[in-house]
Amino acid sequence: MVLNMKNYKGYDKMPYCEPHYPKTVASVVVDTPEMRRLAENTRLQSQACLNLCFC
Image 1: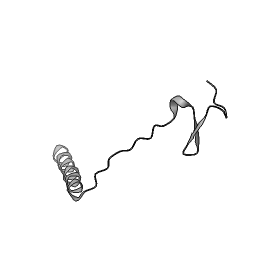
Image 2 (image 1 turned 90 degrees about the vertical axis):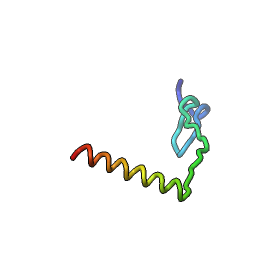
Image 3 (image 1 turned 45 degrees about the vertical axis):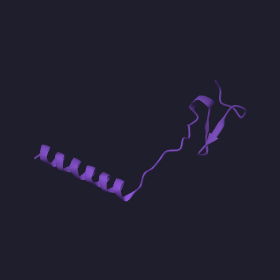
């Protein structure tokens, strides 16, 4: 398949053919104080585990 002016689709100022065109889907981003707290706790626990494993 040759990309030309009749069969290209533009996305983010880049040309794409139909099979490789990026699919845009809506995603749910939960940014509540509770989710931020859980993410911070997870990050801290991961660092604590790494510190214990490599000491």
